[in-house]
Image 1 (spheres, one colour):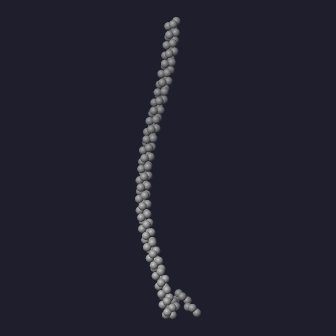
Image 2: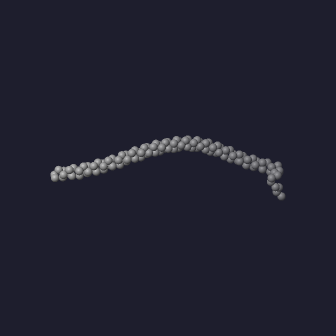
Image 3: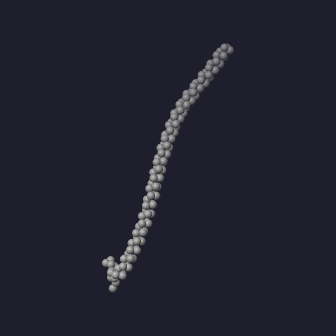
Length: 123
């Protein structure tokens, strides 16, 4: 009878061992699946990182180009401002000269007693 008890004990232990082996195999399959999934995620993140770096580099190049363009436009505007200032001074001098000439012309016409056609005669 004791032999029968030993056999039952061995069967019970074997069944428990088989259940543990089955559980370990399921855990191994789950672990393998997670590892493969993690590898894919890491690869996707690395690819996204490379794309982000390329985008940042492209943005940097664009900003450098825009900075150079802005510098060129600033120089052009400074030159235009200088020219406009010079022209304003010349125009001011011309207006002042014209006013002086008109005053001289008025003095001359008054002296000669001539009334210019655009000025009506005083009565």
